[in-house]
Image (cartoon, rainbow, N blue to C red):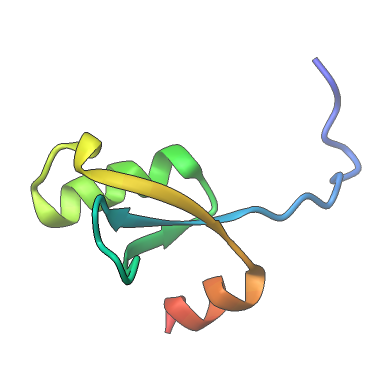
Amino acid sequence: MPSLSPDPGFEYYYKACRKGDPEAKAVTVSYSSVGVLADASEITGLPRDNFEVHEISKEEFEKLQT
């Protein structure tokens, strides 16, 4: 297993959106693609397969966090 020390500096951000939403409004955002699906499901009470995940920029992530 490769070492993560020092931190490789990868930064990935994701948002979960309802499938078929033409505006792709974020239900939630996270650092984890799997975690964002779990959070969206928990927030809405809908199954995880009702959402799609999009990778977003750090700037969009920070904007959606507020």
